[in-house]
Image 1 (tube, rainbow, N blue to C red):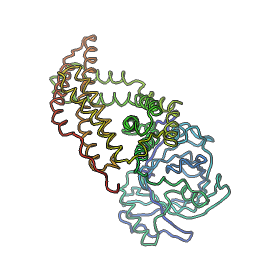
Image 2: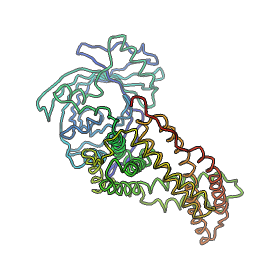
Image 3: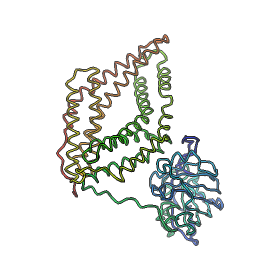
Image 4: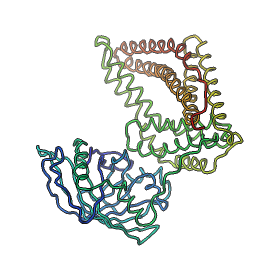
Amino acid sequence: MGQKRAAEATGAASAETKREIERKYEATGETRLPDLTRAKGVATVRPHGVTALDAVYYDTADLRLAADSLTLRRRTGGADAGWHLKFPVAAGVRDEIRAPLSDTLPRSLAGLLRSRVRTTPVHPVVRLRSRRDVHHLHAADGALLAEVSVDTVHAERLAGCSGRTAEWTEIEVELADDADPAVLDAVEKRLAKAGVVPSSAPSKLARALAETGAPAPAPPPPDDLHTAGTAVLAYVRRQADALVRLDPAVRRDLPDAVHRMRVACRRLRSTLRTYGKVLDRTVTDPLGAELRWLAGELGAARDLEVLDERLLAALDALPRDLVTGPAHRRLKAWAATHGAGSRRRALDALDSPRHLALLTRIDALLTDPPLLPAAHRDAREVLREAVLRDHRRLAHRVEHALALTPGPERDHALHDARKAAKRARYAAEAAAPVLGKPARRLVRRMKRLQDCLGDHQDSVVARAALADLAEQPATAGEPAFTWGVLYGREEAAAADRERELPDLWSRSFAPRFRAARGH
């Protein structure tokens, strides 16, 4: 069952992944399934037998995984016996990563937990033994639509409140591979007419923890944003949470995960610098250096991917009569040579003691922040000053770059302006919950400016790569004409961005800030 299946590299071994889309409902021992052939799209309901399942759930002593809605279990019985690690995707949607049954936690799953558990061991916390009565729902053409199971569950607490037990019955409806999610709505309507209501518990583990004594830790209350210190720390905490959350996504090679994790590093580092009057930079600067290191280790693969996509798109856009020699093959070989080991480099960084030390230092910063006197001032006042200060810094860099003649010196100055635009954007993002609409407007303006300057810098990098690509055919006796054409086009693209910049900058002035409603 599930929406998709794939083999996924997760460190030392491979693990199977599936997208699990399901809904849970309350039931009792007397609950009987209604006639589900009356649900739209369901033609037949076929009994699939009764299975005994025995699952032991693992977590840290402080239930760190459960607090983040992750579940780790070792299950026997049924067709999918083994280790299962589930990550939440959306309400009722989880990615389940499976590894073969073994006595100890597989390394492929341990790596995915590392950012959350660090060096803390996981151990059994709950045992669930279930009697599962399974039914398959089929369409008129015989296609499997969903699996409906009635589970009678016995839960036993193994740690924390050891020995406590709970029992309940529930109904699970899980969507089949490639089936239309509308079938879940149709089945829910039939269940509702029979008096069956959705479960209040998001998972069996959550229910077991709640009913055997000590549930998973509740989410923290909303941040108080009235002082500069609490407002800045709220943004720092969001980026810290992103670093933890995206670590397993990078290991799983999920789309855009590396980029988003690197952006979280940059946002956090930039915030520590921008708000140096709130958080003591003698403490935060060493942390910023480590964030810069991590972003660099993550960025090697992403930068090459972006460059390769740009060059390939440009090559594909050329008329055929301008493509000479084995250009596509040459580009592919060049990308393979330059990208060798870049993903391994990112994974090695995540597995390093240096990365764990960085996460621990961020936790320490949030637990005992190095607050300066400005941290206790009104958030509106301090954050407004910081945002405007970063915008003035950006203005100086943009105006300096525009005063230079086109060439390498201006390219370098525009790159510096791009970095300043990012910093101004992140400063406004951090201030937006306090300063409201004007800060959000500035974020949009900085994003447009950053995109223009970013495309210009990408052109600079692309031209350097094209010059390298042009040298290789010459030594191999191949024509270099195509690379020269692409180089010229990149020069023209950079010139276009430089012509756009003055008008774009004239529309990027910082707005007048007022307090957000409620402050």
